[in-house]
Image 1 (cartoon, rainbow, N blue to C red):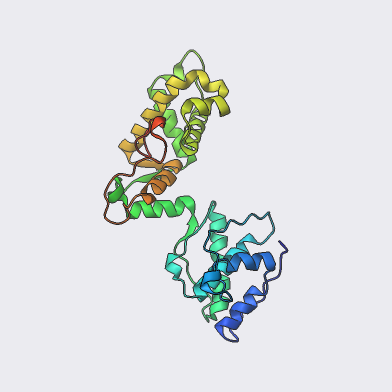
Image 2 (tube, helix red, strand yellow):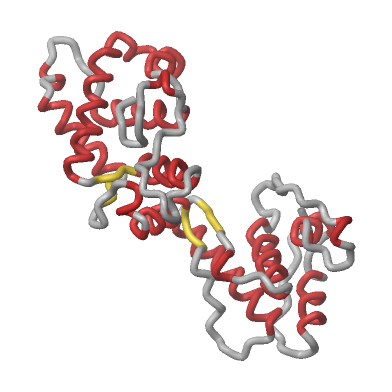
Length: 270
């Protein structure tokens, strides 16, 4: 996609004119993404209701396209409280929210210098944590659960590894970082541990039985301490969203992985 300059904010003209002016800064492919399913020039029966996947490389103004779609939706009556914008890093999330707010401010002709807030814009992990904390009691978590980053999770894995005597084995057992990588890959691929070891960590395959024991103890340690790692955030969110626990259902979410994987909940052992 070609990068085009964005004109300075202006409140002149009607909202429709300001929106048209904003969309005029986009190229054809960018406008198609912004208008997908909500093109006012088409009759309702002509709109494409399917989700849209946009594949674009670096420097193609993906963030600008997303910002203009947000502005177009809100200008058309969408509730900004019901728009979910997700990305991976905090920096990208802040930039996404800033750019969307600027375009929205210009299209709506707002006099305030502060861009309108989009409360559900953030990272996957950040938004997931907010939702889980809000509904903690309904999904079997303490409201005071804590979140371990990669370093904290490695340290806990290391402590459990030591408590099980695996750090002092005659043969060198995988280090805590490697153990966490194996655990995370097993969780995220929904694959049996043996398969993960064979495909990604073949040098650790001889430790399959010990790793299973380690992962089970790691999960128990997390549960005892009311701790979630980054994998748990996404697993609990995914499993919870697939049930009705956001309303009145108080069931602890069950795992989205096959039963053969041996996990009965998002925090169960791999």
